[in-house]
Image 1 (cartoon, helix red, strand yellow):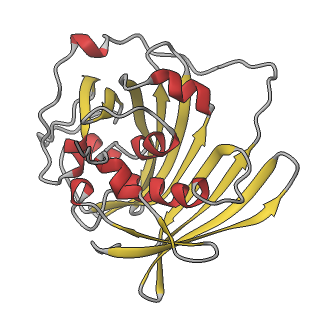
Image 2: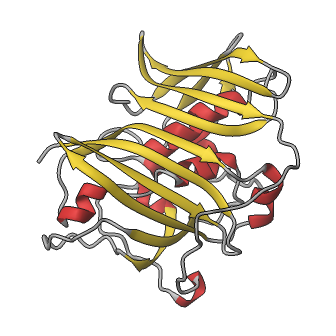
Length: 269
């Protein structure tokens, strides 16, 4: 029996096309209002590094700039190491359609070592994923259907009632379930609607212009998660002059901080 790849794997799949070059294609399961879901674009750019034969270590940080609208269809990914040190490596990755760069990223990979560790961030007290119903979804785009989301608070109901904050806590995992890895985790860091939607309780024209992910988990910790839900905690900090920032913490059910995401969002009010 032939088993089809998970939609996420198909969306981020890259085929070698020469030195430092790959080809790929957008996937309908992750379509957004305009072009593809930004989380899969981030994961695709990261995959350009993970698929490269010269890679050293595992991802430590990923910064993506969404420079232009990405159309549904084929694209090229160009990934090359800018500097390789003894335990760290710096990358530049571009996603091109036609002759133009539509998105680009810098990636830092590193060989981790055992050291003293501590976590100042506090794992929130929330109900378990198993005790909450799956959210039916309220948006007309496809990508939210690719996640099993179970909200503990800050549910994304746009009822035009202005809120005092934009805090959301939600258990989520890929749907259908898929073992967690760096690619899935990078996409999950973008799986939160613009905080201006939540703060204003209504949708306005908006889109992420830059996203940074800091990976606090190594490959072994991610593998230990299997297909379990992770807890996402998102909030906005400042909304001004057409832009706002937002942050997201991604936790394991055991209280391990797996990743932190920061992004800047354009909005029109």
